[in-house]
Image 1 (spheres, rainbow, N blue to C red):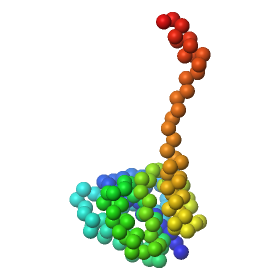
Image 2 (cartoon, rainbow, N blue to C red):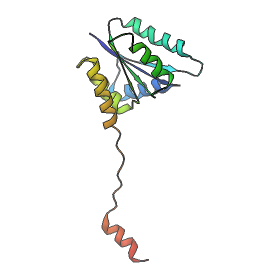
Image 3 (cartoon, rainbow, N blue to C red):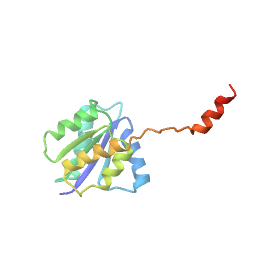
Image 4 (cartoon, rainbow, N blue to C red):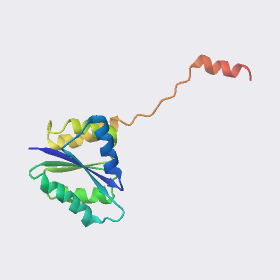
Length: 143
């Protein structure tokens, strides 16, 4: 069964991260961006999702959302409860999205959901600044 990703989020989050994904990983026919704009409501957003779902009948869908608890997450979650072939991940970042887009159709949709979460977590890495001890001691000698 074909798998697709629907990225969604507030304002132009989805189209922005999709643009970055395309720049880095190339064009993806099975990844879609759905923005939740300030004039939209739950019904409009659901209609946007349903248009993609209708055009991709019989596909497994991973909804990838920007923020837990927001309207995009709630509408995607509502749809996921209507079909066992739909899964939802929230809190996505670009590193996780790139990794996930490369794994489409290579594992079950549930495994893909977990892999997406794990890849997003792994891609958050704080910069550790290291000061060489000799330079630190040098700067203290004149004081």
